[in-house]
Length: 150
Image (tube, rainbow, N blue to C red):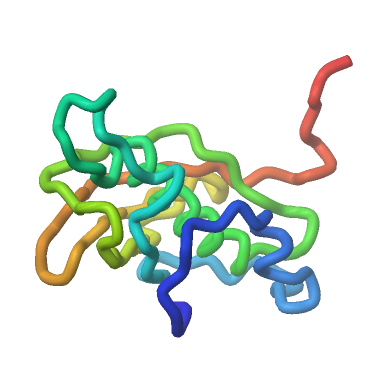
């Protein structure tokens, strides 16, 4: 867990985790967990087109923080040349978090299937309140094998 509350970051994950700090072989295993705090600001908020009169954590913003946390957890435990892509999100947004709230996002690697499908339990909380909860799946890939088209 990072020691400070962070504003939502646009910093690339590869800049947050250097190749020098990554393992020579995968260290992914069920039970690995990562969490960090973030402040509900900027691109994470919505007022639902002005209909609710207050700015709150948006569902897409919450999902983005869940995916980012899971992605960093995987990237930090994969060797250089490997990364992950998300392919499934199944979450419920069960409570509101007002703009300025300090929330915690947590991702726990629950299962590795076929050596490359990573299944995570994800959660966002605001203190003792659950804001969102669900699952997220990512696939480990070789970065050099990514075809970006013509």
